[in-house]
Length: 93
Image 1 (tube, one colour):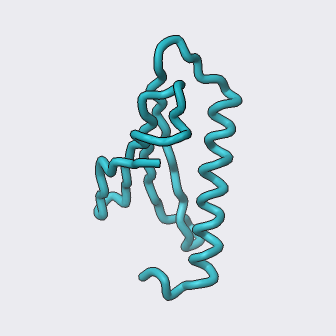
Image 2 (spheres, rainbow, N blue to C red):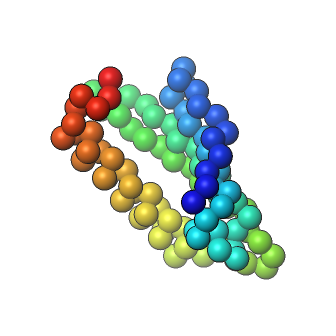
């Protein structure tokens, strides 16, 4: 996969990037853009909000099942990163 970083804003804790190459696009998408925003939660943790924009090719119609599958993959990645960071608190500041 090839991603392009569109914005990294340390003041607003926002990260925007675009998937521009890879198997996930196949013949269905020109690109997929993502925006991740991190916010503090009342219990001292972090809330991560992610928005995805799909740019389809031709007559392809994106279904709710496609969207759900994409969300599950993204959530799986977040859980792996979260587990790593909890086990390795010195990996970040």
